[in-house]
Length: 420
Ligand SMILES: Nc1ncnc2c1ncn2[C@@H]1O[C@H](COP(=O)(O)OP(=O)(O)OP(=O)(O)O)[C@@H](O)[C@H]1O
Ligand SMILES: C[C@@](O)(CCOP(=O)(O)OP(=O)(O)O)CC(=O)O
Image (cartoon, rainbow, N blue to C red; front, side, top):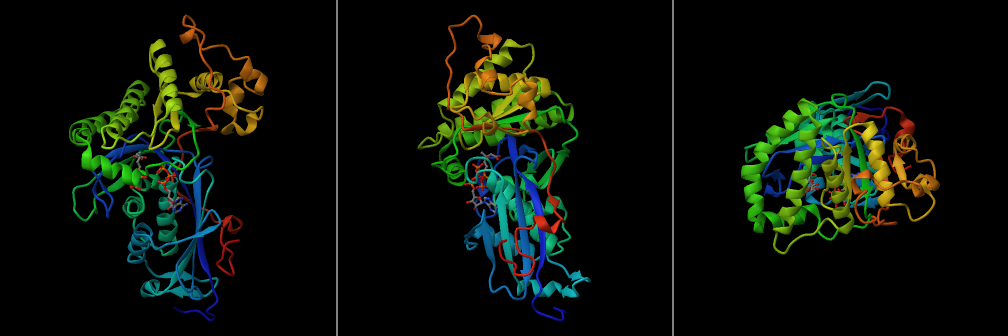
């Protein structure tokens, strides 16, 4: 370690998106390495609306590895954090900061400690894949700090050891997690199928049904499914391999009808596997089921599907509209059935608010004036479910990890290496 003083701090800040699977990962064949029983495919969400920002710093004055999540210190002793830190450290290379006169040699990294500060701009552990964005950002930022030469796919295999779905957040656009065959997990990594510009018509609306922490984590839920669900075995062996090929084709051809059919069927099958688990796991609730019915009824009333839905291990709905025009019709439907509890529309629709404006929704009066959707015209007057949705996030497919070079965006103090 060559430097005049021992008081220096070197740091890197990165921003990483979250992702939503359209062909689900559910089940591990190796719990420690986090190796899945099937391939999965996801859409990366625009980091402008949902992302993690992480600053990692190194200094000879740091006494131990420390981490702060959303401003609160958390323990790094868990196996998943330790595995990521170890895997990155073993790949670290020489780092030189000529301006500051600092040189860190490859072999120094095993003796140096890091400080990590991370912030999610959306609720943590609420079924919005904070662990995916979080571990992807950790692997990416540490990789940059330690001058790791591995590419994004190889970094994804490290993020995977933090949380499986995290490996897919190393890329923007459409991403496949290849399950791999090797016992050591070296070939279980993410690859980009297409970037976010490839299909930029798509609009994504997330209905946040509940922000409470869930009863069964994805990790324990999928462990129980692997142990008890025969449907999971059939799905992994017979269904998913064919679906993956069909989904890749649908994405390549921007074929929304196939994309929607496959995404909805796969979400429903994943939840069927949860029901097939003993004891059964319920992630969706009545509101989730209502959203499925609204989407299905609408799709069936049109010549071609207008919207796809998918649900992770929680009740929140992720709705993907075929284009902006359809997204405005979707927002109208959602607001018709789920008007807000208060008059505060501004905090009810967050993210890309221009979709609501294009839908003619500028205030609560516009919500109250919404007519019933035409597909229910001939039925008995439809029921409304005021207050059953906490809020909506309007977003779109987005880009992969980026470095933030502006030091004002760093979460750690440049001199002390402690949270700002
Ligand atoms: N920014 C972050 N950096 C590192 N780790 C994080 C970050 N955010 C969340 N995590 C880790 O992920 C855990 C939450 O993961 P969990 O799977 O319970 O919720 P989620 O990812 O928000 O929801 P889901 O996986 O169901 O979509 C946190 O307890 C923490 O260990
Ligand atoms: C339903 C899912 O969101 C499950 C995600 O599971 P996690 O990646 O959170 O699980 P661990 O690997 O145990 O951390 C489907 C998906 O994202 O593919």
